[in-house]
Length: 81
Image 1 (cartoon, rainbow, N blue to C red):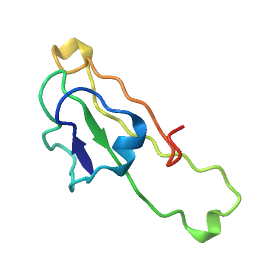
Image 2 (cartoon, helix red, strand yellow):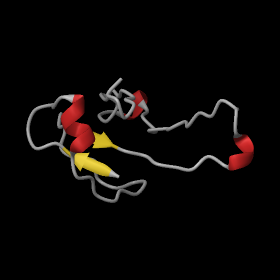
Image 3 (cartoon, rainbow, N blue to C red):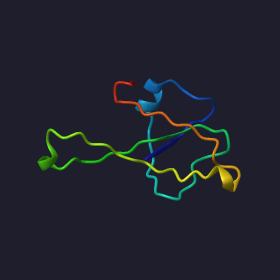
Image 4 (tube, rainbow, N blue to C red):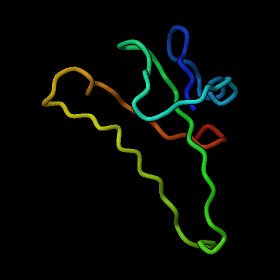
């Protein structure tokens, strides 16, 4: 899911309350230098209980291909950590 922030970056608490839209791989993120929040949800199989689970997101940035690599990302928990 995606939330394209209207204006400057916002506090984590606001982003966590925002209304997100469906988002698919390859879709438009937003304007250059804009702020866009992505939210991913999933279900861990019950038989994985007690194991450490990680999700890896490959944003496919390649700085040798020109613009598009000037992004940064942060991971936040529902508590805003």
